[in-house]
Length: 587
Image 1 (cartoon, one colour):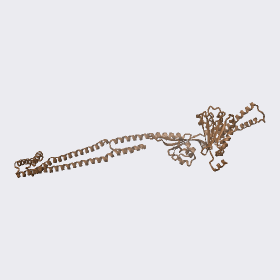
Image 2 (cartoon, helix red, strand yellow; image 1 turned 135 degrees about the vertical axis):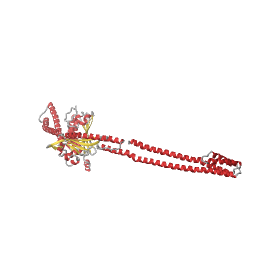
Image 3 (cartoon, helix red, strand yellow; image 1 turned 60 degrees about the vertical axis):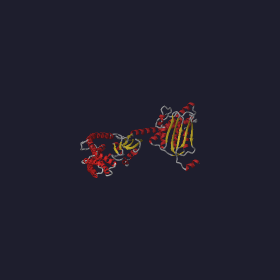
Image 4 (cartoon, one colour; image 1 turned 180 degrees about the vertical axis):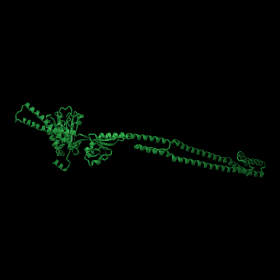
């Protein structure tokens, strides 16, 4: 039977039983009401009339009031005859009353009237007893049928209460569990309802869906396996190492090149946590350093040096966190990480060759340039011989070119040291004012040529700065040289030295042409020169300055307003405060 039919039948039957109980109760109540009304209306009134007539006849009957009362109640009785035999007794009473009216002193007539009234009362009392018995029977019958019908209604309602929720709820619960199983990709799940109702139809539809899903899954496993093998083959044949991890940092795959350079076997890696493998493998430990970073893509610009293919090889590391939004969800979820190692050994070898070539050429050029400068100094010595005006001009031009070449070769040598990692820092507690004075004296001649003045703003008792004096002086000298080069004649260059939170801040501010906004972020790049500039240079000075300052644990930055000048500053750590330093400064 259909669930809908069951519900209609059960609820309809219950409704019919309730209606039957209501009708039955109404019928019996109306019947009891009728029986009671008959007793009250007919028999009770007759007894009352009879009582009044007895009072009147046994009183002073000759009195008008008693006679009148008797006549009134007699007439009422004549109109209220309802029981068998009551009419005859009423007629006898009427006849005796008429005789008594004619012979008021006849006591036998009074006795006859009392006898008649007593008979009338007896008839009505018997009728009341009979009707009471009928009413009691009606009440008993009503109670029986109401209890019977009520019991049947209760049993039906109780049966519906026990069976109906289970008939509806149990299949729904079973179907819900099956749906959860399907959601968990258990496509073998089936629902079995023996009854042919709506749930049976729903089970058939559900089973059909599960069967099709199972067929779809089975039919796609072969394709998925083929695609998996294809991807694994592509990854394994890549010339660069590739490593894959799941969301729990377990190894999913590691291609042949990655296994080769790490010196690992696939069976000893796959399925293991990266922390466990990193404990016994330096390469994996190095690769795992940035795995727990919050950045979505972590790229370390410093190449990783690995001994592979019987030589030192260099790889660029790139870590990519794979995030997806699962179907039906809104929150992004990380499902794994891929580590890519790009083999940059050929480029590194070319870079080494370039660095060695520049270092060799610069070193070889430095000696003849120094000789040229020494020869120029001898030419300027009047003891060697007098020079005419044109010769002096030529010597000065050669001197400037030689100085420029010497500066370029110096910058190139510094850059080769930076690139090769051969820069040695001798960081000691140095006097910040001495560094400033050295840079100012080194640029004094160039400033005088353009009539530029230096304005030094520094406290008399600055704390010592922790720095490599030579490298820091070279940086400040380079900043002042650039400021002079790009400043207008007769201008002022400000040099500020101040303390900031246990650090020393050196600032060089000029009022020259400034730097265009699109080039501000590029001026510290190697070999970068602002397009359109007429001043010559290698584009290495600021890059070397940045390397020197950062190697000392400091920072360097620039602020520039195009057309209004630039402000270059670098910050280095100062010597920790102690009482001995205070005494020395006061002394």
